Length: 295
Image (cartoon, rainbow, N blue to C red; front, side, top):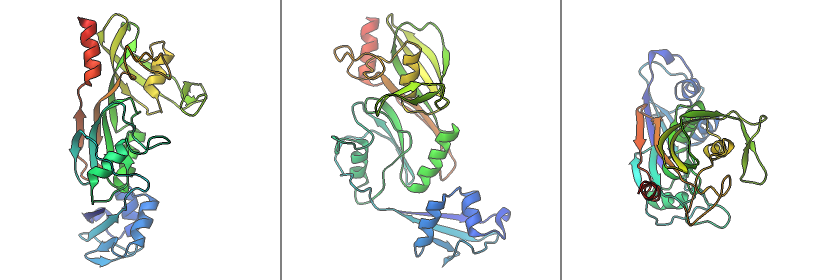
């Protein structure tokens, strides 16, 4: 992978060092700056190779060339991908249920990572997931196509600028909208999380979309992004997700997975600064469950 970025130095950075411009204007990480310094043509001013300590002046053209090899140990596997958007810096997919994001013990070939390695083809890239979805969670997921985009998008995620909304079927009849504000910490075992006053701040807002007797369709928006946040918070208020084997009750005859779908995603494009917005309809299994309940 090779990504070339070119900028013109503004009056604000006249007399500044290249390193200062990279850190202050472009929010480049120390590790990325180190990578660019190590490349023979990684940093150039007006076509000439420069050191990060060199001074720039207004009107200078600065060019960065970022290179990455393919992610190690991720085998390219041909799989169907629902690509919602793609450019040189980001790719947004509508992930189907029952597909993990990352390879793991016992699953080395049927993941989003494998599918994207195949999709990239000869354009060898690292796998940089931004908002990771659980295996059984469907819907919108953003993947950065290089280290710099991943760093900027991860920063947006931490600051709440990358916003997500989900739809979920939960057990029980919820009468009105609400907010769950309860800190989340690691629980027993590797996977489990729990509400714990010593945990990290976690806030989930929910809105009732449809009441289905013993179940409720909710729209949920995350103010924070803790692991399993929606699943933990809904179980905490005694309304676990339908089909949630970890925090609720598994019943594959009723529903084969946790009924959670990433329906809306918005972020600022890491390179051009454009506000990006995406929506994804509910998966067919959730639609079918709702239809049957309404029948």
